[in-house]
Image 1 (cartoon, rainbow, N blue to C red):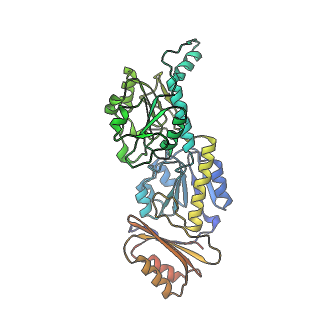
Image 2: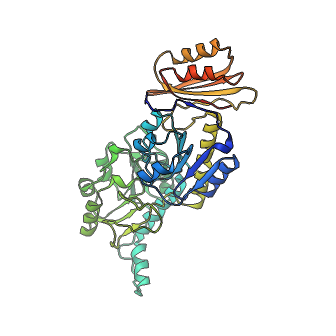
Image 3: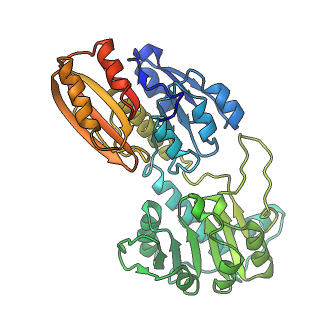
Length: 414
């Protein structure tokens, strides 16, 4: 157990709870949290590590998107932090293990912007196949270039999807409805939808399809997934899209294959290094190429998606704080109990070793506390117990539970 960890968190009144939301999180999320009585501060840009350490002092709930990184060092300097909301799909910008070890639950929105990313991918595939970006640039330059040369329908073309999760599988269905033949590769065993065909390897997919699109997560093991060898293996005059994570692709290798003509066009929405806030300079190896569509990480940035994400993640943060529910958390055991009215609730996060549940119940019994309901879940080295009891705990009971050697964080919710 971390020596400086505050194992017992006192019950907080709603008006005492401080929330910090960064990176232009949708106003609906902030308004929902304000409606619960919380003190909510919003900021437009991302924060660096030192800036974030200063900003999270006294903060209980932190909301970020994809550009703010919550490192082990940040977590070590945030003793009051109870939960982090990633108002996006990915959580690779958060040290999930360190957060769990410090009793900080993380929540994200794995489904809310799926449709937005899929629609952008479809739009960019059509734009690249029809060379619309080159046509519009010519028109703005006063050049009338009415020609079918190099323009193609996507009907009948072979789409290769790398990563067949929520986004990849929905893209599969829509692309097939538009007449594309769909192939996919995933390291996990994923059921094919419609007439999609699974490839046994990434190499097989690259040698088969006309369009390659990446939809995998940003875990460190995926860094450098696509480099010179993968581009060379793609079929001549193929199209390439990356709407997932910037660290996946060697952009210098992509530029070289675009300039040689081996890759006919590309669309890139994510980059290894991205500006922290609106209006900051943007640098990339891919700038200045006429056959490349560059967008500023807007795959999920539609009003519909951001509103859904704002509401969804804010709701998860509130439910965790008020009821202890960890449903869908990527770093906690998934546990929840029905909403309580006539009793009180205790949330106990601990190291997953045998005998903890028994020790908790012995302490409660010795102090005359009756258990109304209880659930235990484990996830790797972490265990989580929610217990409904018939009365608020006395300080000596809380002390006994908090000083169990396995305790990470103890919260009395009401």
